[in-house]
Length: 246
Image (cartoon, rainbow, N blue to C red; front, side, top):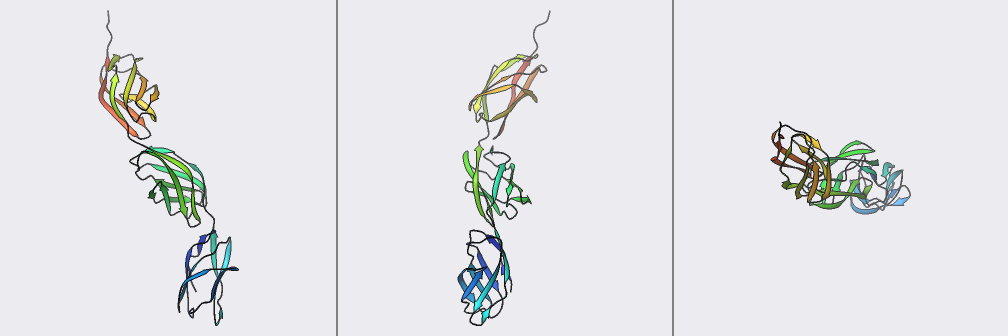
């Protein structure tokens, strides 16, 4: 007499189908000592909604002819989330985050706000998921397992940055020039490069970043700003100029 599924939430509410023979007119289905709610019954199956419980219990079906042998049903607690590897990312999604905790082995989905993603299970304590696309702003992150759903984390979608201007647009090949970068989505800036060379920078606000040019060879170079939401490139945006010599 099989039981499907053979595991469910400690809070109850799992739809369980028990199949076998001579099951017509079942009068009771018990999970351990607790009665389940019968929702459908045929000569070969009984469908019930599991009661709350814990651990492993025996499931029995009672008809006018007697009580069946017990089948094992395993109660699983709701998952616990301990950490989220990144709390922000591009609004276009596509980046991978790792969730650690416990009770994650049966995770079926991870929701970022109203957007669901299918996780990859590493172990009961680790899963990874590719973040779906979402609108800029903060959303809750929830993990759904056989044992239930756990909330508690927040994730912020960040739009890709833009660069609208650099001031000044040229300076000495020896570096050391303070350059103001104007644009949008700059508040989560993680790095600024001039021709691929990392420059010291400070975030003024979401529309302004101040950077100090590193030394560079004479000529026009690309300026790249990398943020949590992606990167923006000003092609040939800054020109290194050789100073006068005598």
